[in-house]
Amino acid sequence: MRIESTTHRVKSIRGHVAGYVANFQDIQTYPTRETKPEALQDLAKLVEFRCTYESTNVKVMTVCGHVGIFTYGLSGTVDIRHVWPDGHVSHMGGTGSFDAEENSFRHHVAQLTWDGTLATPEFLPACLHREFRSWCEFQLRYKYAQDVLQLAHDEAHRYACDSTKPWEAQTAA
Image (cartoon, rainbow, N blue to C red; front, top):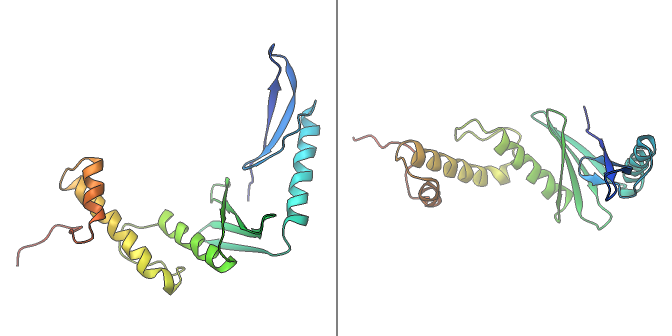
């Protein structure tokens, strides 16, 4: 797994390098340091702090190559680090329980890996099957409205929002 970190030059008003700041994807370090090693040291301290003190409850879940790292944040919410198959990391957060946020993560991955059919992925819990099917039908109606009916985006969206509209060509009996 590859987790991205970068350092950025901080320039003064006159364009001279004033120092460096290290970034860990969605987590910012704010103090400006004179050298890159000092900025990276700040980054290492921040990561160590978050891993050590931020949460006593950590859960890691892998779904279709996507990894979810669930922790309780300092404010009591659930923080989710989403490590994508290509290695980049995004941050999500929620106010629900660990279980609710895990289900949300599973649903999100199901949408990202959707195969264009009404088939429900095996990793989705039963409580999400109806919601996922509804989402699939919306996507199919939208695609039908654009590809077959040749509607513009706004009209296709309105068409897709109406669940009574067909999402495939109707054959005459």
